[in-house]
Image (tube, rainbow, N blue to C red; front, top):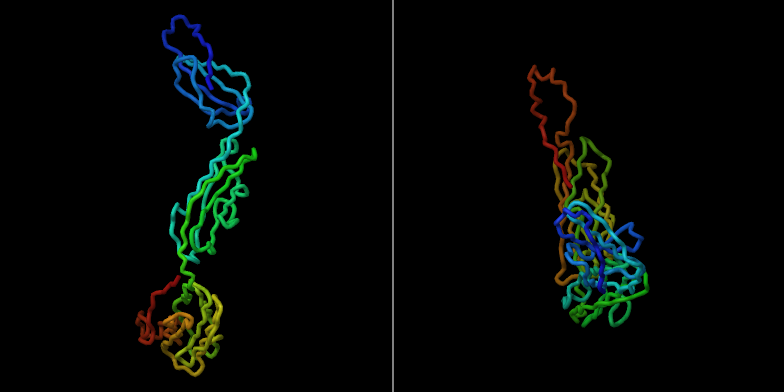
Length: 308
């Protein structure tokens, strides 16, 4: 499109040439979009392929370096433009492993709306629907060649699509299971002559693969487990530490977790400690310490330990 105009400078003493800026507005001048800036002539060719569709007008602003004036064109109507979809991830020709979690992200730029809403971003493969929106993840992408297509639809009902190819290895064997224990250690602390047991919870989690079966054992009599085996991908095992019958002091033990679904069997060892009246702080009357301001010999000072 060619836009032409006339202009003059009434300041006879002003030898400066006029310069012009061209803007486009769709809301009667409330907001404007720059189209061409710094024009020295009185006509210019405009590329309307990047202007939003619908009714609007051009505005030409003239300046002599000090003052400005403007004029608007007659109203025009531009054809609506289709959106511009883009696939951001995965990358084109990516190779993935069957069963691997694949993150998809994309967007739809639009000259009319600015961007396409999540509901109007539709992902498909040659086999059918895959998902919607700017972000989502898929674990069950089929083995072989997958043509991933993102289709964007704007408010004018116009659509556009873009596609990439993703390759998924055709090894359909189970990738196995991997056991993880959380937390990776436990500590129980009791005062002197304690008889009441304490409990803490161990989480047994399968962090890869499917169908994990596990077993658990304790190697000390004062530590018992609420479950000795399981077959869920996440289980809670309650540990019970019982100080009854134990003398003051420090004790150590361990829990042995075995993933019997893996070959060879995966073994995870969780250390457990128990401390009874390990010189825990008790108020002391130092006046009975023969005037010595230091603690009696049966007391020790400890730095605190914090575990996250």
